[in-house]
Length: 631
Image (cartoon, rainbow, N blue to C red; front, side, top):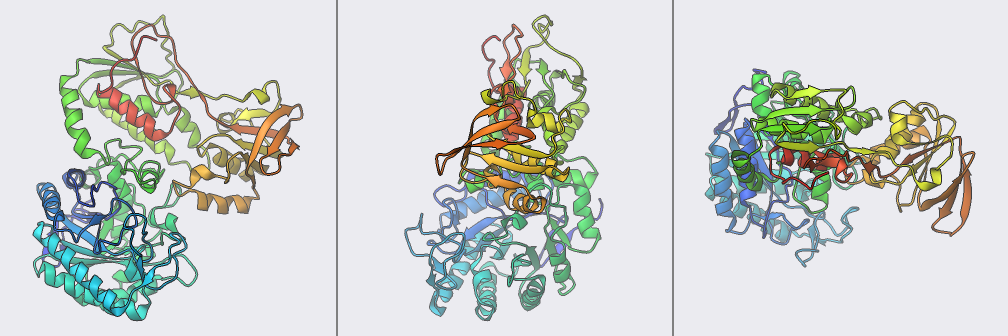
């Protein structure tokens, strides 16, 4: 890994290594200003070894507000927040830049109550708001805005500026004849504001992935044009309007999928080039640099999942991997919530969690912990408790760890879920957790030796009443576990809010079954939309011939099996025969009777998602949660 540790000169300054924490939305702003959470968040990645950190976008126009918590860099009140960020990052030896930009037609008047300024007067397909076309005078006003924000960045002690020209950027949206002179004017204004002793970079749009959109060749031409003005070039792929999964690719997308863009740019310019592309392990980041596709490698979600990604990479240690589930990062941010992480419950809450957790750990009376259940919640509890110096025993009744997550990982495009299990199990072993497989803890067991008992026994499948007594009607877990092998014409009833139905439908279709899905929702595969899985799944489903039906409710079932299905739109009830029916619905918590006070976490408390399981398990292991009533 020594190559990743090589210093890289960025104009007047030197990044200590090649690992970058690129700009991304956190939703941590308050009143359009940076906060203590920003400082703690970026400081944690600096402490974790990153060489260069680039903050989320700072707006250059008070009227540009596509989302509520976008920081307004034109407000002088941002300067103290910048100073706090600079102090937090510099304390650990990293460089920190601020990304600055304008969102153009991909903005909104919802928060500003002012017209959106865009490259033209055509509504963006996603934001659907008709902009006010910017005149040359309007563009000149924005050039001045870039200079104002850059001045605030310098006053705040940050190490420089990255100009955002990719994805949701006005500069990308402008016609080439206007974009290039506007960008050069912006770069000149920023350089004048920050002076020669700070870094100036640019993030260019690469392959948009749409017909007629920008290509890697376009990025190369623009990179050559700006090379005399900048100290590095960053790259991007995809656009939020139509190819968002290219920007924040979900599970199943391979590392380095975007390598063609930085490779092409690097071959044409002499300044350092940053490449991105869903790098979740140090080995993948190393391959990107060694292959010559980039000089520095951008790792966002990998460092959200493990703030010490860089330091571990440089010493050859194992990281806690991002699995691309997008549940707590992309999905939460899309709902205007603070960024989080399914595998790292502290992510996005560093300012609040760190002092609280440290205090509770120091004052906790628990010395010996028994964890019942070896799924993600139980493993997280065991790791957290052991990290706090407690003697931990984990009892799992099965012959392997992982619980329902290990089953879910058997589905197509969901294999990375098993990384959660293996990473937590590795940490548990490293921390000395005693793992007992094929061990059931019941009321007769002696649990008196434990100061804290954490119950993480998960949930069991629960078929609906209409399935009672019917043959060839099974839960999705039976299929994933291999205990049922549906074939022929299979109806998959999606009655939940997870990937279970779609994943199982795809698995069966790949095995040769004719698959039809039914859901009472208005859209099919709706649970996949927030995590950006839906677009890719719909394409695979079409290729496999999976037929989707919405607004359908199963009222009953008869031998055959035959389902009586209500069409919400027409009110008609129609018989639907099938060779097999596979049901994906809410499970039922499994709560053992232990006769001692316990803390319940994860699905045995209430079936939810992976993020909830790990978050609650971690909190219980740290002794943050109080004991529940006797069970």
